[in-house]
Figure (cartoon, rainbow, N blue to C red):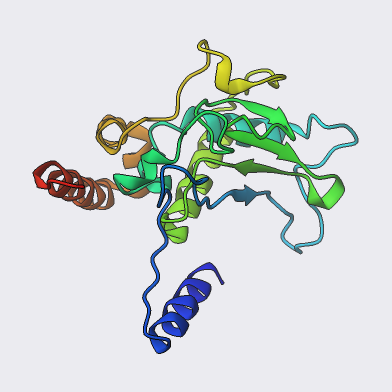
Length: 217
């Protein structure tokens, strides 16, 4: 539906003599355009959310899934933000995250916990409007399974303004930084294979090279 929507909007705009693009940050004075990605794991019948518990802590499966999301946030950042422009969106106070933290309904954190019962889930606020949804979801699943397989424990829930806490890990600030994280990622190669990782690293390097060679306005 995400891809169909984008194609539909582009076609409608073209019929009106215009063109549309989905940039993460099209103007310095405006808020960025996001692709907040919500995830939860259900039973085979698709009737029960396996994350939900009676409290807001979630079951062990959820805690491990969340821990994997946070542990891989920097290494998988390229799959959430694949362009130079995408990193312009990460500005404090803009509803786009700058820190890798999790909090209950806390929109200053990279990961926001929300919902009740079957609606209980984690929202990854790092992806921007220019993310490829297939790659972003693949990275989300790989990160979650990494946390489950390694039985990782997430950090404590964060209360307060995560933008102002220098002790928290940062979302990569540039495409070049994200490419470096992906190049060093053993988990990415385990999850996607060398061929896939090399392909997207090549794409990332070409994007960065094109920007480095351009004189922009």
